[in-house]
Structure formats: C-alpha cells, structure tokens
Image (tube, rainbow, N blue to C red; front, side):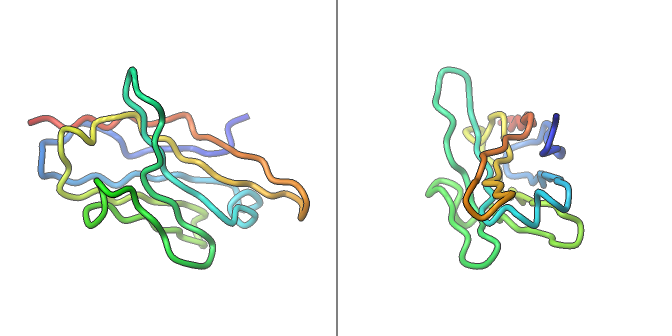
Length: 121
C-alpha cells in the first residue's frame, strides 16, 4: 500500500521555484515524529535534503540551506518542501520519508514513490 503520496515535481528553469507536497493519512502523519525529504540522482546514493520533527527545529543539507524550506501542515496532514532559487544540481528524484511509530515501542520507515525535479540551465 502507498502510505505517502508525493506531488509537485516538474521542469523549471534555474532560479525558479517549486513546492513539493507529501500527503499522508492522519494516523500516519500524527504518529510520525520525524519526517524528511531525500533526493537521488542516477549513480549516486540517496541523500538527506531536509528533515522536520513534530516539535523542534528543522534541518537542511548545506547546499540547500537558505533556499529550501520544509514545513508540516497538521490540518492537511502534509509535509511540504518549498524550493527557491533552484539550480541544475538540484535535479533529482525527491522522496518523502517518515519515521512512523504506530506504537510506543515500534517505528517503521516509510517512503514515498518519488517525484522528479528537473532544473534546466
């Protein structure tokens, strides 16, 4: 079953913006104390882009710091990644990730299907 549904990817020129969305059910979203966005390009390992806890301070990979913003909407059960001033090197498949804890003593990692972001020069 698909637990995380991603959208918002596409083609954009360098310097442009995109907003990625990751929608989850309320049961998953409310029990995921940590969520994140990863990205991956062919031939490279998947890398962490940004992460956000339910309460606390979000974190960013150095190359996107100041350009990307991760946020959680607790009403819509959605995690967003606002990407501004995009660069060609940002091109990748972006994946939503959640640390889902359905019980107090058990957590499971969930992945979205991925959404393609292509930044042209």
